[in-house]
Length: 314
Ligand code: FES
Image (tube, rainbow, N blue to C red; front, top):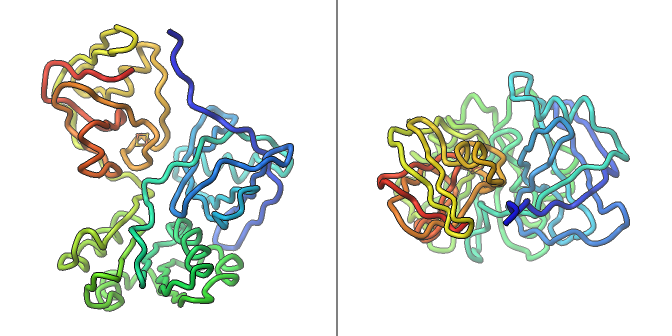
């Protein structure tokens, strides 16, 4: 059986806006004007760039607008090349393939109050949520920590009808975050998306909260734990067996064996490389699967294995 390719949609760039924070906001539409697959607040898509890079970006437009996806990309001069390509090469009118939306950062239930803590470009998933909150008249506070210039100011200026947007200097995040959070309450939810250090500050501040009321999304994957076991992947559908040496990810071994698995962040945060596992003892090193998901799902870009074989539904 031929390897299953991920579903891609062709979109065209219909507008782009660059701001002084080094962020380029792209609006993508179906070239023939059809609706795009629906996305819930907090979703992201992969962009399949023409230089063979795949990059995941949170959708930051109004999720009710099914004719348009918006992604905001901050230039990262030290990065792996995706943001530089998007800033320097893409033009309005270019076609670009995108994945189906995935949501590893969904809104937690229907709360009455949300406190959103964002670091820089980590504000993007919250923008989609704020469109929803403003529509549903749900109370929220967005605390945006920034360095030099806040990102996406013209987009944020359209939001905040039922919420408050507060800007903070990023240098003070450690001291400020604990003071921003109200006392825990069953109807109050705290969400965070930002750089690793800010996520640590947020974790410290919500230690006494019920974990069901707290959620976060990494946009920079933390360092992956070392993969110290060698094992074999047994692919139930194709009948193949793929050896995974020490230090190699399941994703790398599958790709070397010619088995196509979608991937993007390579750090266990975006959800792209998820496969179903059937037997064995997987080691889950990801930051996007819930305990319930882990009973049958496995992120191949970071996971390891404690048993001699891991049977996958591939
Ligand atoms: S590629 Fe993003 S979680 Fe594996």
